[in-house]
Length: 355
Image (cartoon, rainbow, N blue to C red; front, side, top):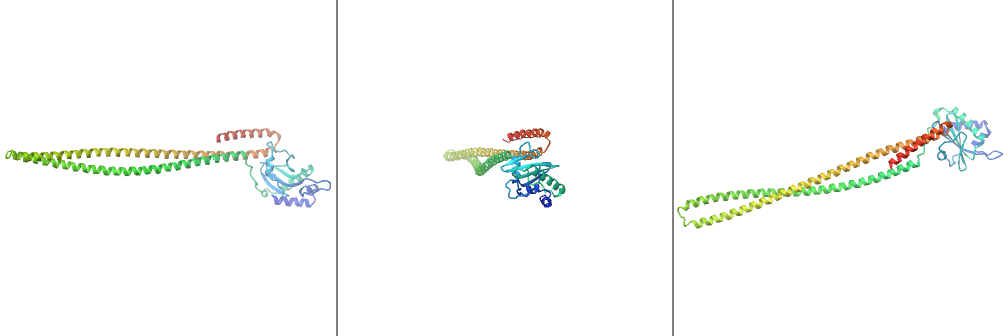
C-alpha cells in the first residue's frame, strides 16, 4: 500500500491541492508558527488489524506497538488523541477504514481535516489487491507469558524428576539382573550337587544290594558247613558275619547322610527360586508404575499446551475487540466491556487451574 499511496500523495501535493496538508506531510514550518510534524500514518481495517503503514520519517522512534500500549480498554474515539511524550496519535474513521496519524506535536484541526481528505481520496483510488497483508499480530499479554514460563519451569522440574526416577529404575533393574545371574549360578551349583547326591545314593544302593547278596551267600555257606564242622568254622563264620555287619552299618550311615544333604539342597534351591520370583515381580511392578507416571505426565502436558494455545487465541481476540470497540457507536461499549470482563474471569479460572 505504501508505493501507490506515496505516488498519489506526492502527485496531489505537486498540483497544490492543499498548502496546509503540504506543511503537515512534509514537516515544513509555516511562516507564522511551527506546525506539528506528521511522522507516520497507520491504516486499520474494520476488524482492527493494521493493513498498511505510510512512513514519512524513517528516523521516528515511535511505532505501532507504542500505540497499542497507550490504547485504553474502552478504545479511542474519532478525532481523539493519545500522547506518548512529545508524540501524538490521532485517529479518525473513513468508511470501513480507520487512520491513525503519528505526529510530533499536536495536529491542528485543519491539518487533520486535510489529511483525512487526502487519505480518503487515496483509498478510493487503491485496488483492494494493492493493500498489504497485516504487518503484525496482536501483542501477547505479559501475564500469559509469565504463566507459560512458570508452566514450562514446572514441566522441566517434572521431567528432571522423571529422568531421575528412570535412572533409579535402571539401576535397580541392573541390580536385579545381577542378583538373577547369581541365583542362576547358585541354582546350577545346587543342581550339580543334587546330581552328585543322586549318584551317591545309587552307589550306596548298589553296595547295599551287593552286601545283602554276600550275606545271603555267607548264611547259606555257614548253614552248609554247620553240619560238617560246627566247632571248627564257628569262629571264622562269626568273624565274617561281624565284619559284614560293620560294613552294612557303615553303608547305611552313608546313605542316611546323603539323604539328609539331598533334602537340604532341595530346600535351598526352592528358597532361592522363590526369592528370584519375588525380585522379578517387584521389578515388573516398578516398571509398570514408571510407565503409568510417564503416561500421566504426557497427558497432562498435552492438556496444558492445549489450554495455553486456547488462552493465546483469546488474548488475541480480546486485543482485536478492544481496537474495534474504539470505533463503534457508544451503545456497543458496555457490551464489549461485559464480554471482556467475562473473558478475564474465565482467564482467571484457567490460571487458577494451571497453578
